[in-house]
Length: 248
Image (tube, rainbow, N blue to C red; front, side, top):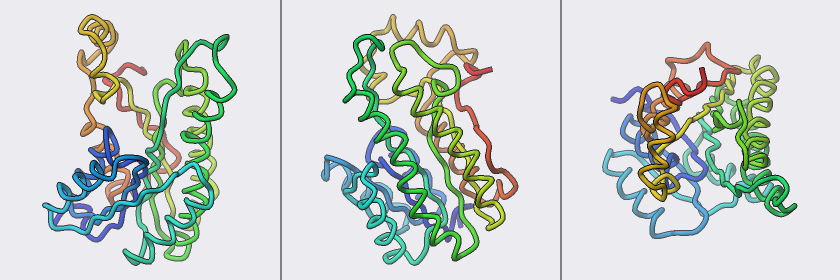
């Protein structure tokens, strides 16, 4: 029996990177897991197969979290299939990095829609079943960039900072219904994007991190486990940085 046994979890953007690590960690610890993906059904099926090895129920959904109506359909489908929803992890996100003078309106809008509007969409529709059962944990994926900013990422930083304000507001709104809302702010995490960096670029990042390494998807997933489990029943409205002391 894992510490998440009996929990029903929904992870947006769960077919790769941090999202995939979260799906697998929650399955390993006994949760039944639903997750969304955008493009590769083959990759999603591979994640389902890997997670099912832990003997839990796992289901993938091709769904655009940035679309309000698709988000509503997703939540309804998950609750119908699994019977309830205990934990929502708003993980879907993209980057469209460039300096402000070169940034197009489309690059701004795309990042805000996928990173921030998706959090509104899923949270809005997940609150109904959570309020009915008088319990729930919502975990929003922010970033240390949303805390201290970064040149060339004004759109991304704004979206991630918005998530922090949203998280704190929702925590105050629904705390009386025993629903918690927290944010995680990852630092530099090993993903497909960091794999494209040169060794010199990686070294430059690592030199600025007190723990002297990049984070892993599992590091972030472990923080999600804490916030999604009953170990954190009095933790809400908080931002937990998973960054090796970069944001200190």
